[in-house]
Amino acid sequence: MTLMSEPVTSLQDDTRKQLGAFLRARRESLDPQRLGLPRSGRRRTPGLRREEVAMLADVGVTWYTWLEQGRDVNPSSAVMAAIAKALQCTPTEARHLFVLAGLPPGEAPQAVCCEGISEGTRRLLDTLMPKPASIQKPNFDIVAWNDSFGHLMGVVFNAIPPEDRNCIYLFLTHPAWRARLGKRDDVLPLFVSY
Image (cartoon, rainbow, N blue to C red; front, side, top):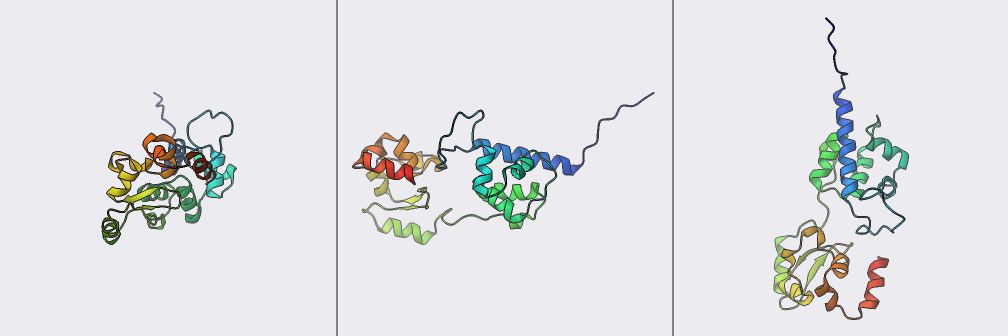
């Protein structure tokens, strides 16, 4: 009697495959236009191309492709931090990425500046009422606001998903926001050129 056994794969192989699947899923979940990448031809799959992730992370395309394919490469913490940033990973996702890459999770990027706001900043926004005020990241993500700012822009921020609270995105997709801006034809080129 002959017993057939399935090939044994090492945990390392499985982990590398999981790392590749995670990288691919993050890459495919990102919208190139929201990241300010130019439209270039037709895309066969959703999300970013491998070349775009490599460019954003400042790593070689071939090396990144090998990493995503689960080949035996040994990324450094600095490289994985750059990839996590390029893929816009949350701190939790970055820690998971580091674990899959066999790196200490404590070296993963932590929450970035302005991820949340302090109680003092919240009080400052409230004391500015009735003057409209908001706090934005350099990429125009709106992280905090007072009620007057919402009224001024014609939106209820709590009804907008956090990932959509971006001035450029709202300008392009939200009619009330767009209507509130004077000289819209002058504003659009400035936003798009950013």
